[in-house]
Image 1 (cartoon, rainbow, N blue to C red):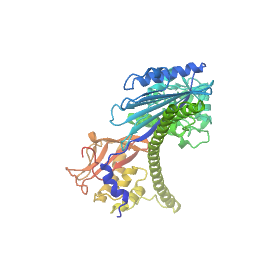
Image 2 (cartoon, rainbow, N blue to C red):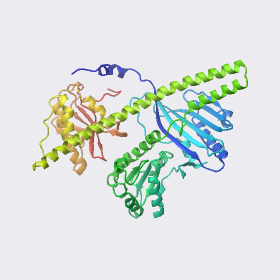
Image 3 (cartoon, helix red, strand yellow):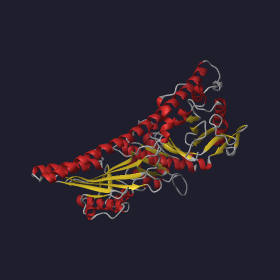
Image 4 (cartoon, rainbow, N blue to C red):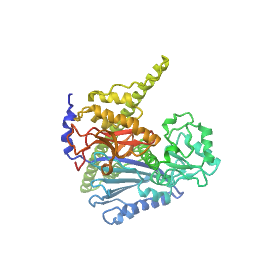
Length: 537
C-alpha cells in the first residue's frame, strides 16, 4: 500500500518538540449588577485584582490598585493592565498568567475587561486561554474564581436575569411556566441545564449539579425541577422535548416547541443511576457550556481581547501626542510601544488561529466519525427493509470475516455499526498496521460486540481476565489507563484485549484498548491492534 508523505514523516514528527499553541477554553459575557455604575465597576475591578494578586509572582504595584496601567513581569506569572478613560468610555483590561500546578509547561491566561460607554451599565467580558505543547490536551472546564467573586459582589446579569453559581430550584407552577418562557426566548444566549429530581421523601438530583452550576457560572444556567412541575414542560413541549424521571436535559439557545429534540441532549434517569454515567453527564455539561460560550459570542463585540485594547490604548496615546505637538522623544517612545504592541498582537493571533484550526480539525473528525456511523446504520436499515419487502426473514448472515486490513473497516461498519465503534485515531491505525492476524482482531471484536456487550447490558459476571479464546484475554488496563476524547467528551480508556506473554513485536503483539460508553451502550475502541506506546515503552 502506498504511504503518504504525512505518514512517512509521522515517526520523525513524534520525536520533535511541539510548538506551544493557545487554546481558548471559554468566554464569559455579562453586565454588572447595581444601579451605581461607577461603584459596581470599582468593586468588580477590585475583585479581579484580589484574585490576580494571589497568582502573581510578586506584589502588585500601587498602579494596579489605583486601576491604572501596569506591567508586572514575573517569569510565567506575568500580569498587566490597561485603562482607557475618555469622555465617551471607560475600559479597564487585565491579563493574568498562571502556570498549571500539576502539568509542566501549561500556562493559563485570564483576560478580563470591565467597563463600557460612559453613563451606561458596565460590561464584563472574560476569556480563559491555555498555552500548551501537549499533543492531546483535555480538561474539564471551570470558570476562574474571579467570576464567582463577582457574582457575589457586585453581581452579574445576562439577559436581564441574574447569573447564579448554584442551581435554581423551581418551586411552583408559575416558576415552571417562567422556565418554559425562558427556554423559548429567541434572545437567550446561555444553555439551560434542567435537572429533574428523583422522586421520594428526599427529592434529589442524580448528578452533582452543584458542582456543574459552580463550574459553568456565567456560561450556562442550571435549574432543578421537581416531578410535580416537570409535567408542565411535557404539556408545553411534548414528551420528546421535556425532561422527567430524574433525567437531565441541555436546552441549547434557539430551542422551541417545534425544534428537533436531538439538538438538545437528554440524559435518561435510568442511566444516571450508575455513578460513572452521572459523572460523565456532569463533565459533558461543563464541556458543552464552555464550547457554546465560544461559538455563541463574537470576539471584538460581546467579548474583548486584551491585546486589542492594549493596541487601542497606544494608538490613542499617539494621537494625543500628535494633537498637542509632544516632544519627538516622547512621540518616538510611544510609536515604538505601538509597533511592539502590534507585533505581539500578530504573534498572539497566529498562535490563537493555530488553536482554532486544531479545534476545527477535531470537530471535522467527529463529524466524519458520525457520518461513517450513520452510513453503516443506514446499510443495516436497508437490509431489514429489503427483507421485509420480499416477505423474508430478518437477515442474519453477516459479511465474511476480513482476510486483509483493507477489508477490515468495511467489515466492522457493516457488521456491528451500533455496537462497536472506532475513534478517528483508531480508524487511521486500522488502515495498514504491522500486526498480521487481522482475522484474530475480527474475532476479538466479535466477542466485544456479543459476549461483552451482553454482560454489560444484561449482567452476568465480571469481565476481568475473561478468556476471549485460547491465548487471548480481556483485562482492565489498571495503571495503563489513559484518557481520550470521543465526540467532545473525555473518557478513561480502561480495558484492553491482549495476547499472553511479553510480546513486543508489533507483528505479533495484540492489544485492543477500549472503553464502554454507558449512555449509548456502545464499545469504543481507541487504539489497536498493537501495544500502545507511552513514555515508559
